Amino acid sequence: MNEQEQIAYMQTRITRMAASRWGTAITAAANLFARYGVFEYIERHYGLFHLQGDDAVFSDVEAFMRNKGGDFLAELE
Image (tube, rainbow, N blue to C red; front, side):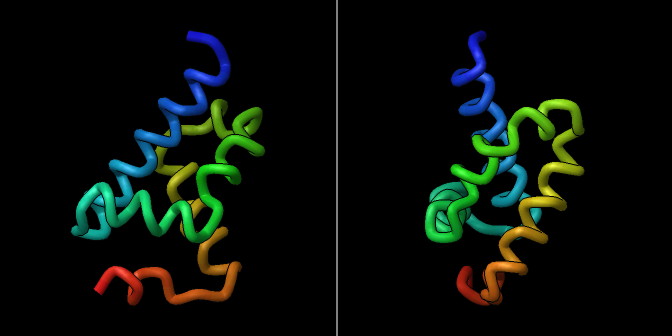
């Protein structure tokens, strides 16, 4: 896989992880990620993220979303 494919694969894995952990549909998690700029965030920081496990990336993504000022989990309800 080239780097763009690896980034897309990571974005997909983290989206699926979010849906599972948040108890929501994959499309709902993906829409929330789009609203918060998470896909771009993962792409921008892929150089660091690819050295970490998915759990660490997911934790960082949640912190990123919290720092953007929203109660993102409430948006899923």
